[in-house]
Length: 145
Image 1: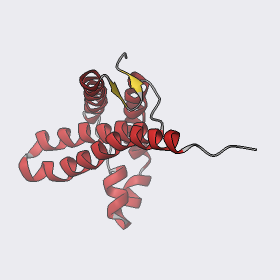
Image 2 (image 1 turned 180 degrees about the vertical axis):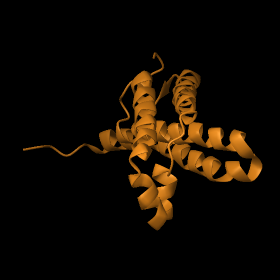
Image 3 (image 1 turned 90 degrees about the vertical axis):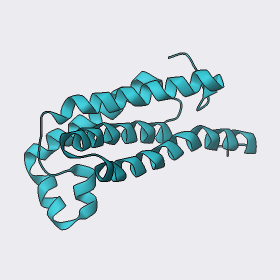
């Protein structure tokens, strides 16, 4: 019979997820506001990097004990996968009917977006490592990466 987590264990699990969850909310806010502050390609590619950064934080919320490089690799792979999915035309069709689908999946493939996903994932890894060093521990993991 599976045992239920003890109160200290449950609290520790909650703490491991709180910082990346807050970071995810802040990243969404930054992503939604970036176009009001920046123009053109700068805004677009900043948005791409923030998209990958958001996925990085969400990976940490779901799997807080993974290593930083794994989180970054998953964030980059998911972002690139979504971009490649746009080649099918399905995201464009879904986006025509749903603002949420358009925001999450995009609508058209753009190869120059791809390196900016890596930038966002690496930014997440760097911020995560920096936070771990400054606190000695972040998300219940050692600061070593």
